[in-house]
Image (tube, rainbow, N blue to C red; front, side):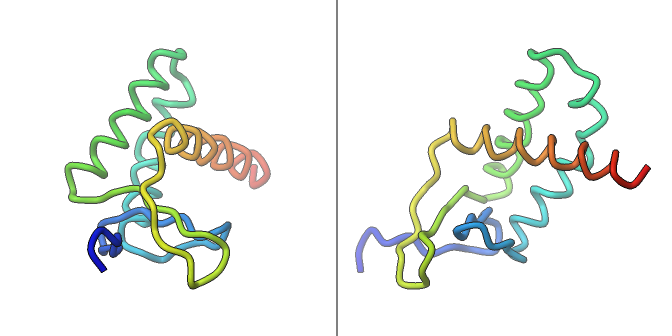
Length: 103
């Protein structure tokens, strides 16, 4: 059908809490790992710039941020930028928390 979003390998997919093994999700995880030291030691402005840089990198690679409801019949929709920022910020917090548990 016209206008229905079909995810591609470069897209970051949010699937109702399930972890996606899509290449775009892997790219996002590697960017968060790459930027984590800068983010963790940065000011609020630095953190905002890091998150915006990550969003820009996903877009430059041809990726989008898409979400799907909890069932497989749900359609894919574009995630609003504010929500993407929130999700990426949460990834940094989770990464920091997981690193502290291991040390």
